[in-house]
Image 1 (tube, rainbow, N blue to C red):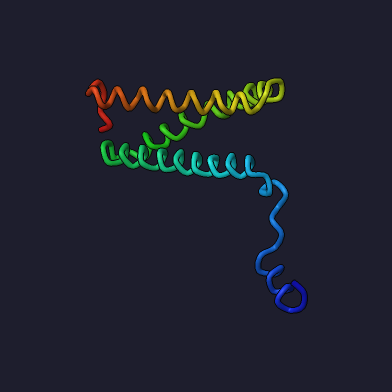
Image 2: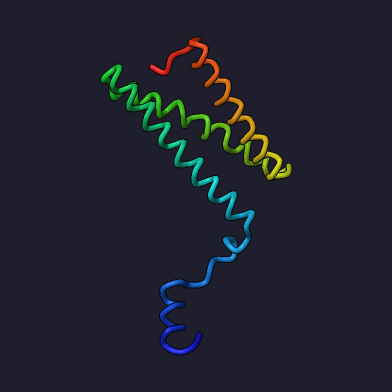
Length: 117
């Protein structure tokens, strides 16, 4: 396209950034966004349930602290692990581990061995 229409198109829809031109990256990026959204929804719901049951902002603060403290202590170790091993294998193993953990928790709740409330 040339002329004013082409200039308008380039202004409204600039070129796609290079990483997004790769379909594998787009899938990983989209799944990462979905995973992050699910994680923050989980944090919000658990904090909300805790406030509803205890009415204590201190306990919500403790919940957030203990859920994030592992990132501080395990972050450097996991970073060195990622640098020395195949990242795609580690990504797949971590996704599998999270899926298994969620599935086990779901089975526990379905069998009335634990309650969500």
